[in-house]
Picture (cartoon, one colour):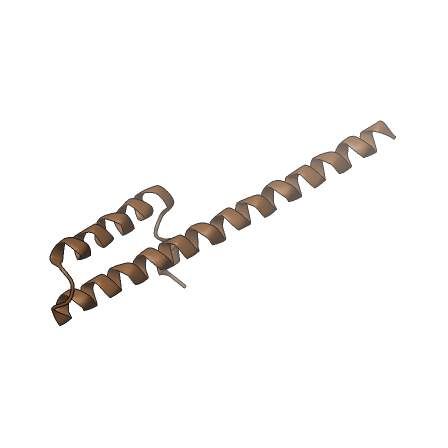
Length: 77
């Protein structure tokens, strides 16, 4: 009986870890999408004359940092 309970506990822990990983992946994808949106808005504002090249560069730097840390998977999809 103990073996069965140990296996059930391991399976539950594995499922919990997979769920946490999926949540983390979704959160990182949302963060990447938000950064991409901010870059687009900064570039648009710059082109319209109400933004600055510095703001666009800051948005680009933040996006590149996110991609370095988490990959660019959010760009496909």
